[in-house]
Image 1 (tube, rainbow over the protein chains, first blue to last red):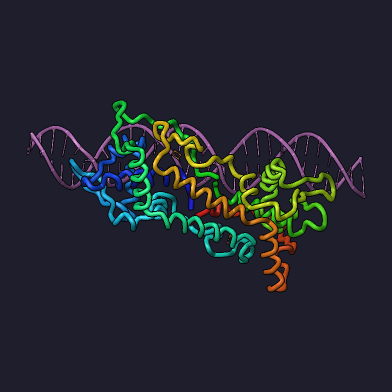
Image 2 (image 1 turned 120 degrees about the horizontal axis):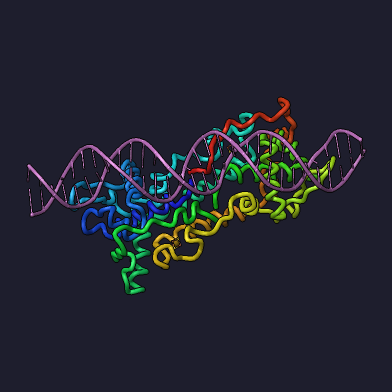
Length: 168
Length: 168
DNA sequence: ATATAGTTGACCGTAACAGTAGGTTATTTG
DNA sequence: CAAATAACCTACTGTTACGGTCAACTATAT
Ligand code: FES
Ligand code: FES
């Protein structure tokens, strides 16, 4: 499972949807402003999310995106799988033939690691994230994340590639 | 923590060293043949491993590399950290300032995931891997991994980018 | 002296990421 | 109806890391 800002953006945007989903479809333009993610980029990501049936779209004025399932049924793993590259398991791709049709010495190591990552990301649902976030907002007394804070005509372009992939 | 074949190669090569480390320094040429990893590429990787003080080098005929510490003191996390990119924690790099100097909604998610991956990879030492491997060899009755199996003048070039990064 | 083997740096092709641009289609509202 | 909205789609760009090669150099053992 590859971890990049792509996956992070997708999860962040999905949380934005989840947090304001009561009031009908959420437009990407809003998400872009609130979360500071390029609109065009969001459109690409949501194209994938839609094809993976994680969100439903409504076109026209007042339209936008809704999360297609109950929040507890959408895991972080789902989201990342939708937007990131098609990924097979270890290096051999499960064929266990790295070395002359033998499974290599480290096959088990990597497949176990993958399982662990997957387990964790599957164990966290959007509902969990939302709950945690709302808790935090309550204790802070301010809905900082939901505020619109438009600063200019366009969301400023992010300082090109601020940090690529996840990390230790 | 980024997971690519680079890290896998490094771990594989370190295991090779560990398994034949009794007989003095191990030359990369041998590792290259046994594990089917390009010699030049190995040299790069071991340059890093050496700078991170995970291996010691001996030059000249009969030279090669030795693992610099007891096997139980070298974890997979160490190896990956040595060869993969300099990696900071989440996306903000620990500064928690993704959004207007605030920590973003997903900060905790990613840092927890990182911690989990790191925990697992730190919990596995070369000693563990070697033990597991020797167990397997014993039960199979053949030291397949240690055999020299030279097939041609050069280890065949791997079929260009067979599978890049780890995976779900 | 020569062969061995580590050390270094430059270089290359590919692919993915992050982002941009411009257009098309569907739907609501006036 | 027309205009505005917003999803949808395609193509393109620049940067970076990966995976790998090559050539030159230095240290050491025989
Ligand atoms: S990773 Fe599966 S056989 Fe090597
Ligand atoms: S990832 Fe740390 S603040 Fe966003």
